[in-house]
Image (cartoon, rainbow, N blue to C red; front, side, top):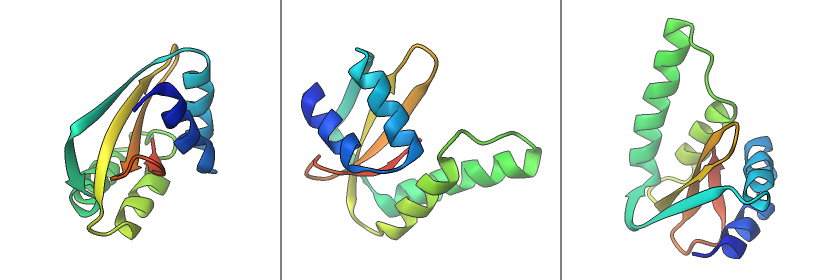
Length: 108
């Protein structure tokens, strides 16, 4: 996946986190796609929903977009998901992409 393809996938997603990640990517931030590793959306939902609940239970402010990402991962069911990270100057984003790498499922 090249920068343009990731930008296109982020541009299709209307979430605030995806828009912020897109701005960072367009500004030249580094990104990495873990192309050879996928997981089911359900597996990722289980892990990230647990993290979200622990944050809520302990009074830690969840990362922007986390609650929305958990909901979107749940809705994606058993779909295979790729992970990509975008490391900006102020923030690091985790992007969950469809198996064909054309759409963002969720972005944190």
